[in-house]
Image (cartoon, rainbow, N blue to C red; front, top):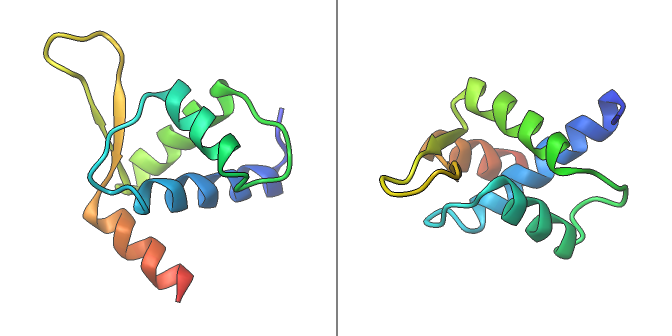
Length: 91
């Protein structure tokens, strides 16, 4: 279980990861691996933590959930609002 500061850091890391790949869609597991591999945070986290982050970011309108027509695994992509948010935070 992550504390509030780690949750905030993970939200920022997920937004950064998705904003730098704004045309791509990711499953929870591939997003978890990608953020881990990019070393955007320095603490352990799980797929459940990333799923929780995505739910929050979806609520803010920064991420959209996409269900492939022939698939059963949800994918997530950053929205234009999410990219603008990231660019304003980064600058």
